[in-house]
Image 1: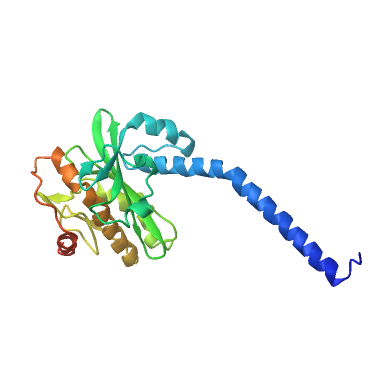
Image 2: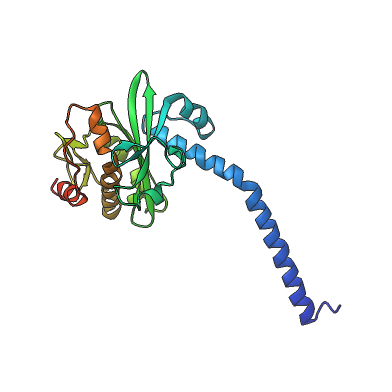
Length: 250
């Protein structure tokens, strides 16, 4: 075959495309178990960081088993006895797109130094992509013990600052309830004036608003369950419009 002919060029190109595609497909299939394992370990690492347990990724598995005593599924403020899938396997991005009444979400019960904490995973939208986090609450179901946040593509030095301790550290000691009312935690400009507020990121307003909306939306399905651990008596369910109004009024 004439190597200078068009036929040879086309044939060579087709063969190379097929070979490269086959190699990439094989690599993707071969590496998928390792990638899935790393994603699982990173998820466990992020959950643990909300209760101030900081470990390397390779140590996240044993540490998770040590500190996380229960993995529950919550729907409409109640434990789901026979969930369709384990708590850890719930796709949070898909879950938060469901109505509050039917949304099934994970709740992790941790024990650190003999003290019990409740960890709530969160998922929302930032300026350029998804943001996520984990919020841990003390035994009263109201006081924040710790928080961790992450993002996919927020602006470095601005919205990306939500993943720093400087931002997440503000949540410690904050309250999600005001008496028996769920008010969430507002991310505000400037100085804070209540135990239901943290200071937003300077220059990262849209990301800050995204974090505030994420917290409000993702905490809502747990509230009636969490109230059973505090002194407050659970009132009638609070509508989404009421929650929005309460947070906006802070």
